[in-house]
Image (tube, rainbow, N blue to C red):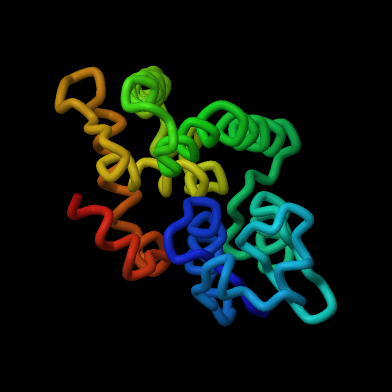
Length: 203
């Protein structure tokens, strides 16, 4: 099993977290789009990383990769057992992908005028702050167990300082800050970080 993974990409880190949490023996090739062999890059119709190759199987969508790994290596499970809870987790991942990730991607690209980037930072901070109270009820993102939802959310939280976003230290955000500290300390999360991503925390 080989994961072609961008050195600094929150989508790639999602998959790396799953590999680390499950202690899956996989070769992680840190590459850029330019460094990726054409025969591998052609697997993705969008010409994007990550790409997971497992013998005759090749996957190019991070969410599909995560669920495939969770099903193939079922321990520890990263999706709930019961159908309703699984559907809720998938819905949360979809929300992250459709509502938050486009903002994160635009901030990373930094191709917009600074005024528009400032609005995006404020929007993302508002969105993330709005879910802070839920962490009073659950240990993780709408669950008492670490799940694929956390695998999607944690890389975004990790990148906030490098995107110019600081979570205020106040009572409202304390549950989220406690969650962040707990997730960042997980061995699986720490093992998932590339050397470039480790440097993001210093920004």
